Amino acid sequence: MTKGRKTSFDERVEIAGYCITHGHNYAKTAEEYNISYQQARSYTLKYEQCGVEGLQDKRGRRRTESEMSELERLRAENKLLRAEKERAEMEVSFLKKLDEIERRRG
Figure 1 (tube, rainbow, N blue to C red):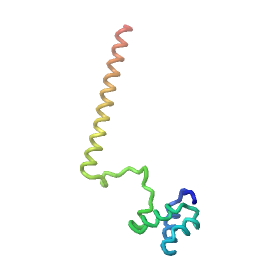
Figure 2 (figure 1 turned 90 degrees about the vertical axis):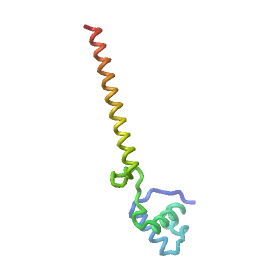
Figure 3 (figure 1 turned 135 degrees about the vertical axis):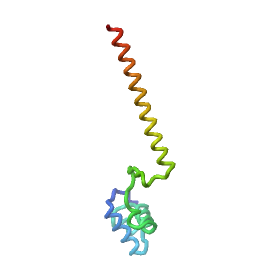
Figure 4 (figure 1 turned 60 degrees about the horizontal axis):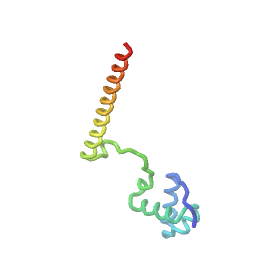
């Protein structure tokens, strides 16, 4: 059993094309490209379901505002406002503490 390896976008497209042209022979494809059987199968299924776009690695990518639903957009805005409020409260607390320390010295 071959251990999976990292592949580039172009490699994934080539692997999916090879597998489809060879009758969905995942084992042969895995051996040919030195990847795992599961990777060969996964790339081929993604290619058949979503086309070339399905083979792109989207991990770690944030969604743009246009891709978000109304609820998701409001939740993100709420989260930003809460963080802003918390920062302002911390700043006020820090300034109060600083003022208190300065009054003790003087």
